[in-house]
Image (cartoon, rainbow, N blue to C red; front, side):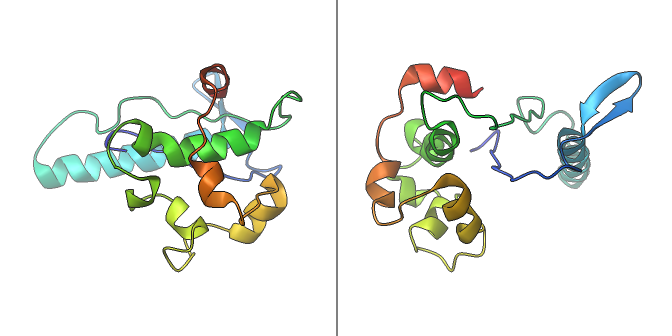
Length: 147
């Protein structure tokens, strides 16, 4: 996406911890991503002789566990992330967004961007129907619950 991105990360006990910075509790992953983006923004701004933000929103972390019992929350998030550039009309097909792991899961790239074995295990993805499932509309009510 031009002004934001999504990562779906499997966290462990260390990465879900919080740290205190200036009397404020912060998630370790959020803080690490914030530092990364801040450094990246400073470098790009210096390189391009510009100022200001490169990204539109603050870094957020959303825990997908425990998932709501009435729907497949983690898999919905997975498809939402892949559909994002398609729904935003940045591409004609989900396959066309070169920065997406969709291309790996659909075997359009060598598969090194993501851990497909872990995704199969955690998300119970049926790669036999992956392409068709990826294009199914996501209920707008579910999208609101994601973020």
